[in-house]
Length: 206
Image (cartoon, one colour):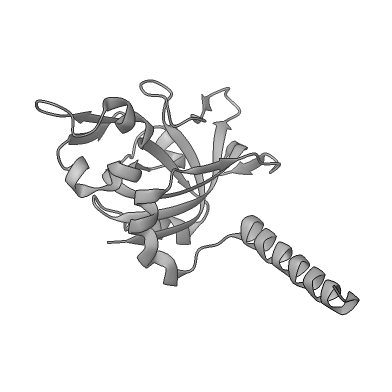
């Protein structure tokens, strides 16, 4: 192979690497991609990875990022809260479903509700999919909007909406010693199984 050909191939490979790395580290979905949310929610599980983001102050609380987080999902239910420290920080919870739990033919067979910062589901007869699959492909998420624009977008979410969220899973504390922590796995259920998400970008589509 000629030297010129080798050099051209090397340049292409380097350019491709930096393009991929740029997408990986600076991913910010554009509005034009909202139309793909339905397909993505049906195919993907939430993406979670390590973070080196330092703790920071926010609205009188100390926020400690514990993992990078991104999700494409369908809104199964929404609940707004106005009382308590939690509501000061995250006034909105979304119960979200992905993979088969993003399919209306599946989740509409469940009686889904929220309350007391929990997400509940019931069914008659047999569940539409195995119970462990419901656990692993749906979750109640407490959402902390990073800014007013994100909060405005999140408030557009309704049952049946498709959402794309990126940000961090976080643990929160304040000077009194009060703490609120995030789950770090999609396989849990019950107490302490909800994700606490500091949402840095949000998209919502009907």
